Amino acid sequence: MNFNYSVEGGNFSKAGTASSQFKKVLKQLNVDPITIKRIVVALYEAEVNIVAHAWEGKIDIEVDMEKVYINLADKGPGIADINQAMKPGFSTASPSVREMGFGAGMGLMNIKNNVDSLHISSEVGKGTELEMTINLSSIISK
Amino acid sequence: MKIKDIAEILNAKVVCGEQFLNREISHVFASDLMSDVLTIDTENLLLLTGLTNIQTIRTSEMADVTNIVLVRNKAASEEMITLAKENRIVMLECSYSMFKSCGLLYQAGLQPVY
Image (cartoon, rainbow over all chains, first blue to last red; front, side, top):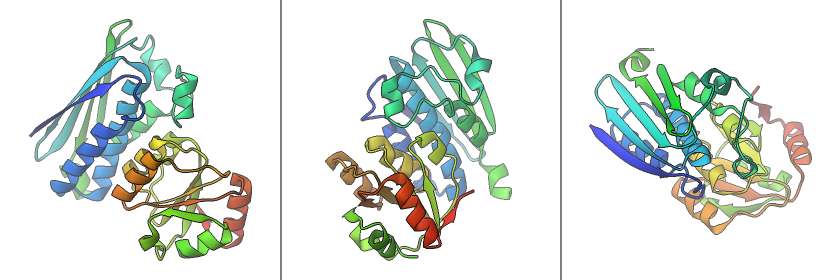
């Protein structure tokens, strides 16, 4: 099953609507609540990142029996140093992002802690792509 | 402790979710940083926050937080109330500071998350 959402950069009043819609899908698919929370926390942080930093973005999600694969691709300023961006506390967020309760440099760590695999690629001046996978079967057996 | 007891301790006004005032609360997390709220995985949780915008409610939705107190005399917007109602969230407004609110609830026996 495939699900696609578009994300508008800078529009904080809509930030989280894609994550909210996909959370409802996961509930309908009877995914267990612990796994749902891991997926939506990672997805929501990544969606907020697009709103906070990029001009626009797309979220493409594939769900099968074993896993949820999420691809978030944005057009935006990109990340110059991904290792630095992964460090807790490192942030380039604007004051308006901080006013929204984000921008403390915790987002990518929060994503990493909730997914089974995470791959980030970025080109400065063009955009950033996040690929994350959450295994469904391994979590259910835990 | 029930949310209605918390409302009394904090002299707080119920903004929405009156039907959920009998929910049991055991733990409290106080934060204005939503990324920290997203790391919490505790049931029967109450969130104390001074952050009043739509992301407070979105974050609560994602983190399965269904009980919120807005401190420092902040008012919930209509947009926040609508989204909170959709997500079966009970939301209170309290005129006390974060410190005073935390102190009163700690004294009353509520537990920290860590």
